[in-house]
Length: 242
Figure 1 (cartoon, rainbow, N blue to C red):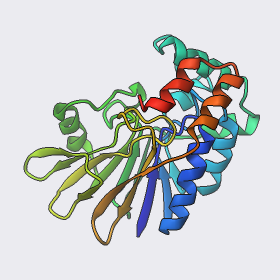
Figure 2 (figure 1 turned 30 degrees about the horizontal axis):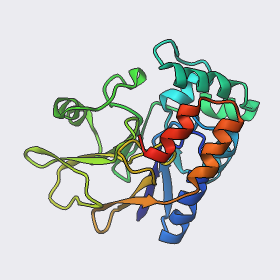
Figure 3 (figure 1 turned 180 degrees about the horizontal axis):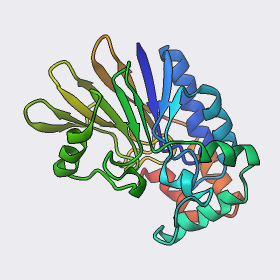
Figure 4 (figure 1 turned 135 degrees about the vertical axis):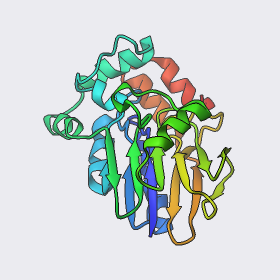
């Protein structure tokens, strides 16, 4: 089975549309999401409609919960907070019902896959997985072979096969790996210095992860952010990949 796993779309419909077309071209059988469909950019409802239509399993991100008042936004930076409050005013009732239904963790036991936005431990806190110690804590409670995450907007695979190592190349071989945590990067707001949309393909037969990077119409997405009255910083960062 070929799985497409995406996350951190952040209301960027241009990026999402490009990714979904690539997923169809690649022939993925199932589509999974690690959350943060909304926040930052200008098309939350359009992105939610598309995600509802294509995803087989999805979990909540911190911006998803913040946009419906399920978490405190006082710790958000000013730009993120402004965007979340704007998003709240631009969600339909259907959007809010969908976001409120999203779990923090989803285990797909038969597939050997777990989905979470941040860390498996205390997922409601939306911690960043930043160190090998963080990864060890997640591996200790991981009940499937592979866990897909998001949140940092930086693609990386952390592998446990006697030791722990990180891989950031385009393809990651899982054949000799006991457990893996894979950050699928960001569709709508990459932060690894590459502005192109990012998602991951997981081939269970080949035991292979492929990170996909796709050029999209960044100028259009940025312009919509400005026209919506959202922070200009959020428009400019799309061009820089930060």
